Length: 481
Image 1 (spheres, one colour):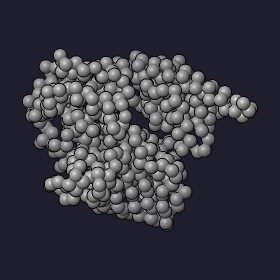
Image 2 (cartoon, rainbow, N blue to C red):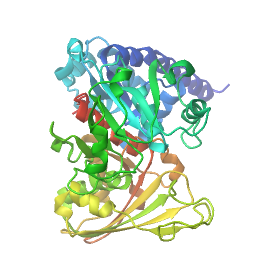
Image 3 (cartoon, rainbow, N blue to C red):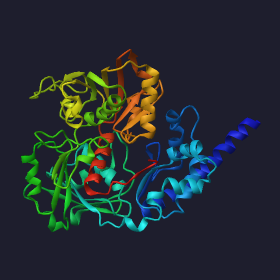
Image 4 (cartoon, one colour):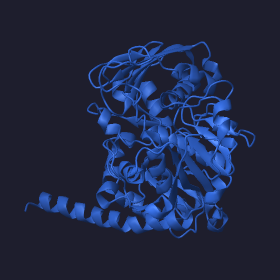
């Protein structure tokens, strides 16, 4: 081998070893302290050595051309493991970058202790019985919510999935439900174990015993007979979208509050986490988590208005087809949606612009919207055409949004990519509400066009879980602040 070849291999082996050493620390912090770790938004819990190294590599799009190294992050998590931390969501990548820029002579241990001071020595304050969760419906969003909630069970102090309510579809219904949860054509196989418990009509999902309840009427289930109390029910069927229809769930013993995974009608609060989640009060028994598109565009719109001011704009959504459309041409009550989803681009309406006004009242009368359904199964794009109050440039807009994605309170909602080669499948599994494609940004004086990708299934489901954690009072503080 040449010296360069030897050096590359030695470097790889060293980084592999450090990533391998991180795995038990990630697991211990998660199980014992309810600490969730990530690298620029990419979760580390239950990840392989290669997945951890790839997360570091992907961070170069966020911090510039220099690759974030596991040599930078390992000392951070090693220091964290000594601090008896309370529940928190900690981005090791951002913390490592901040250490490089702002250490000012401090040791890693001192820097980490000072940065995480609000949760240092607070592990005993994690004590919480956990909040029971019921999923009403088990379609695309329901199954992803199940994956996410189970993945964040930790020591059981947060959200705990207790039951799923569906209409019985066949004699082997439970086996089929398990199979759909285990295998997913878009999001891949479930990272864990699923044991079918026929005797209890339940699934044991990574130690979470989840009861499957068959019912056609939401008001007739007594959840207390299954040991469920004060539960948060998530209705992801879309069948009811007003307070009267969703209020049927509150008539059931064991249900305390309801979240709708669709835009709510009437005066119901439409919550986009990161934007107006602080408006949730103890008196709100039913709230909406808005739509995937609303969650994707509202954080970016708020950021743009804060800096440049928005006079008016139009959002055009290029959206993957959904289960509401027909696979082949057939009757559909909606205009155009009866035509084959797999063969056509279909113009249809979107309520995202109206819903955005509910989350951001300053947009009232300023935003219009439309949608085109396209023949892809997942990941959509919102094209925001905005007229601003002040002139700007592509460079200024992109740098501003990059900083927002890295260092603001919207860091979990807005992601940022700076590659000319990305396409829709590259964003499958992205946990952010929306991802700004900086290489596609167009700017002329006061006119700006932004292209925002979003995983309309997974990214949206992550936003729903954040809302659920907010309601349950178990949403962990985020670091670095």
